[in-house]
Image (cartoon, rainbow, N blue to C red; front, side, top):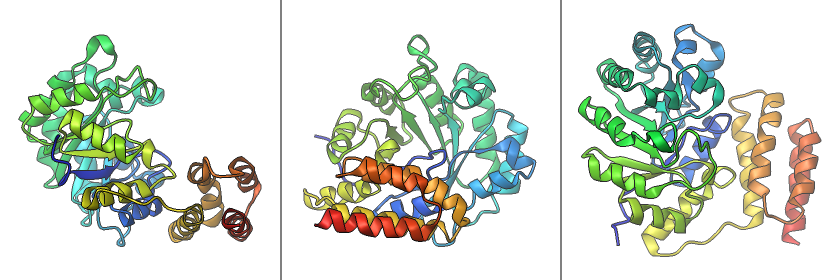
Length: 320
């Protein structure tokens, strides 16, 4: 049995999900580190307003960090020096070599970089020399089953002074299908001396215990398992402290949805929040009574007031 305590539990960077409001909620429930949605170094270098919004970190956040992606070492260095280094309230900078999205991959970014080990060498050296923030590189097993080179990539990171690595136990070809290969994460852990964070298929406390026991990793990054379930951070922490945990009630889930709306409105305008929160509501209430009906109603509503009225009504039904 592996030692379970003293493992860092992080929130993965998730496009369209991990904005300031959601990060703050995960922090409240015990996330040790959170990360922004990934930001393009090209867009950062060209002062793209939308990308500046992606890397916005609120002063209320204590554990938030930034993730970037790109492939041009000069632009990476410029983006870090001009946009990342001035952000004082972050400790870590994450570099993405794992994103499987077709448009990112076609540009030779994200997981496509794993095919170019010389470029990985250049980029990791650039990351380390460009900042005094802690650097992590997030990658996958390889582009496909025949080309798994995660140990080689991990060693390049270690040799060039990267502080820790995060391994998603799938190939690029798998996207998010099939099962994450936790045994391969263990292989990386055994091959490196720097910390290895395990990522992939952690949806419950039991999964957390199993992934640590299988991989002996130094921490775990929650991704889809945290969507609509920021409580998972608390469940894991409570279990590590006391050996047990208590699940939140359906009405506490509804209260948490309302809190996320209110927090989001501190950073974005109402129309955008109403739009973006639709998917969050769907994730939060999945599996609860009448959830599909409520989700359909939320998708048609236009204002915070209408949505809060509906949620209050739903809470009464759940409590009744």
